[in-house]
Image (cartoon, rainbow over all chains, first blue to last red):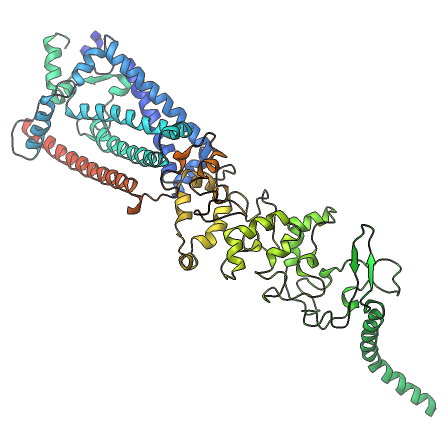
Length: 231
Length: 354
């Protein structure tokens, strides 16, 4: 953290590499959602307009597959980065879901319902961030499995009957919808609509958040940085 | 003077009545003149290719046909000399059959539709084997298409088309549509049911009713009708489920290579799935799918092809879809509830800080 940042009360939350991975994730998921839902809801006139825009169903499929391959590559890179890099390893440790997260979730529920006066105190990643992180990661892995099965349909059908591929279509589509709903209702709320960040948490672009925000939303992380003398 | 007056009256009367008399007389004379030669049963001609052309015609030839009141020269109007110095030309039906005619022929543009069709354009390009009107409708014994005896009636037209399209006719006769037609079932399509009547186009012509992207629409005219299919115990949602499948979606967006109804079920040789010769008999499914999916194995025949995830009969597919539907709805409700609770809690916290 530079002195200028410290003077301005800024704390680094996302390093450049994480921001690049996040940007890839954002763009690719958007492309996949647009091309995917256009096919899923092909009767809709907007979907038909989108498919025409993409140059027909065949080209739509190519765009969808290119985005999918890049997304899988992004995820593989991310897994290696988290497991092996100096920056990734401690991050991964902080992202593990533990007993504390369930307690925090229940505590926040109790607080919000007026049954308790204490709001949980989060570290760098609270239950909201962890749920988002693991939900997206596991979701991408699962949707990739059905997606690859459908892509290589002739190869899949060497091993599986048609019934399994019919199931794969259903799961792939509905899982995409579920992921989309999660993304919108959870992530958009947490990083855009939440009153503490509205209209947007800038860290995905600048990588920085204000120390004040950190103290309010992630007090344990704030205190840890303070102890380490980084603030 | 009296002589002159008489002549004048005669000329006047002659002018008024004779043309009528003369026409009737010339018509009957013309028939008599024609049957002078053509009325002999042995009147025929040996053609260069060795075929015999029967030229036997009597006064009864047109009786009972739609042209019962016509005479030879009404259609063979190019015949002016007996014996004919040149071979009389083929009859041109368009002489009377066009919209706006005064001859009493039906007012229809079918002749224009024909000239645009694959047969009409082949004629225009000089293909002498392509059919003219009379090749399908018959020459002298023309009946209305609604008349069961007509060569273009529903029950007869396949045989008429089959005179040129022999292989296809043989396939059709063995198909489910062909056998049903032979049983006299009224709803079943013959050639014209799918290909159209005068507007017949080559299957690679985008105007054709059997162009790759039009096939499912053409089949669905009958196969999505509960009224028709109910009589024979055939499901009607096959077209809807096809349209929902990858094949159907690609087809709707204009893919000409993706499978349509006839790619799997056959074209003229469509047979019910239980028939061992059917392309969609479970034993033949791998081969049928293998036309496009190289290496297709018996796995292709496991599970229903026309599957509808919205129906309970689809078993595990229905339950998976239903599970995901409620999971998604449940997740949405839970997240919305969480968001509102969280916002409420945060407002409370802010108030506490102040």
